[in-house]
Image 1 (cartoon, helix red, strand yellow):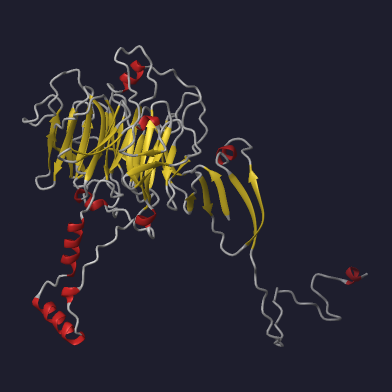
Image 2 (cartoon, rainbow, N blue to C red):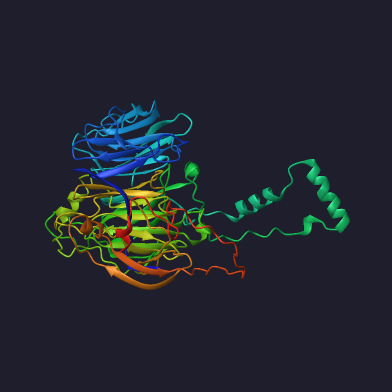
Amino acid sequence: MLLCGVGIRPVVITEVPLEGCRAMWAVYGCATASYHEYLILSMKSRTMVLKAGDETLPLDASGLFVDGPTLAASNILNNQRIVQVYKQGVRLLEEANNTLECTQEIPLDGDIDCGGLGVEVPAVGIVSVDILDPYVLLLLSDGSLRVVCADARDLDLSVLHPEILENGQICSVCLFHDWGHIFTVSTPESTDQEAAASVQPDDDSSKEEADELDDIYKVSGGGIAAQPSETSPRLLPQQQHQSTDKPVYCAVCLDSGTMLVYSLPDFTLEATFPGLNVAPQVLSTSSVYPIVGLSQDGKKPATLSPVADICIHRVGPCDTVGNGNVVSKMVLVVYISNGDLIVYEAAGRRFVRVATQTITRPFALKKESAATAMLNTTLFRYPMLTRFQSVARHSGVFFRGASPMWVWNSRGLPSLSPMAVPVVAKPNQVPVLCWTAFDHWNCPQGFVYFHSDGMLRVCEVPPNTTITQTGSVVQKIEFGSPTIHHLVHIGCHGTGAVQEALQTPTYAVVLSHLVAPPVDDGTENDVDEDPEEDGYTAPKPGEVVPGMDAADFT
């Protein structure tokens, strides 16, 4: 049976009441861990750490900074360490004795040569953070960038201060791997050298065998021209434990709508994509758009809404799912400050816009001004877009907020699919205030999200779910070999436990199974079975029963 609908309705494994959670991250304890072991929750004025085991319990003592909110946290150095970013600096932690210990701390106000971030003005703070092994990218309120690099040999952190030569205020930043080979270009000479090295024999025995074959078949390899290998459309393999070997790039979006792409760690400019805030159909380096930015006086409203968040990631099935690296696509997701969500698909050296039929902009639009947009670039904000590596054996991007969306790609066509959550009781509540991928033995390759009504839910994607290009969800339900006669929807009626159980769509299905009749082999059982004895013996004719007289028979 196929169940068609709009939106992914998660299967809730468990839910816990919680108040005031603003962001969360699930991290591994060590490189050999199979599941996430810690869940870091950022509150308004503190940080809570949960130990995920048979029971999820708070961790009392740890090396994390818990006296204030956490801005970002993630694993680094192939899950050997955990990095935490907070308002006063950066901490590097490792697991020891079933707890987390701090091995290095980088303060915000210290000099770079002395192990700090080099912020001299006290009013300057962190605006945006993105972490991708082995780099931590920090955007400061003065418009400057800091790159924290992790050294795999010494297992410590170092700080770089890159300079952006382009004029304009930075609105958003992100780190990404070049899954689609857009900026990683291999020259023909290197390709020929790699091909020659791959066919060149390594030892003398292989050379002798090759000479013998040449003598037998009268073939000489000197006259054969090496054919260059064709460019494969496959994406780079998705292996989490070798992420430090892949080249990492940094995308910087300015208030004028221009997106700059730099290679790390030298911060070399690779490409410039103008007009991102115009949302063109094709985003390329040769496009020319009018520069529309924020006014300097703060009184004149901006003509176009600035870009609030960007994310470039691999969207599609994992490599373990059939031809996942062939079906997957490299996608650019852009979130505009007015609420619009735009999806681009990488095609060569450009990005092509994907047609979507979903609306993420709120119905009650607020009047935008340059002062409001400038305020968004000077105060810290949690990202609206969260990338994930393996949720239901799928990698993609999740958009949180009042209209939560999945950027999904089941069959080679990226699409937006809404996330169906319980009905919000109050108009000011947000269905998904924060979200993170969570891999646990109780919900393998699942996720955790926090509802603003005060519920923390551990969920997983329904099995056998396919997302179409239009965002529709098709779920295949296996019934085996019975015949389905009737299918009816049960509405949410009743009181108490019945009403609570029918909050999700419930269907009643009438089935029938084919049952084989008993086989009659034609043989009869002629053996007379003795009747069961119940202790009663019938009296004989003329026998006088004790206790009875002739009057009893008249």
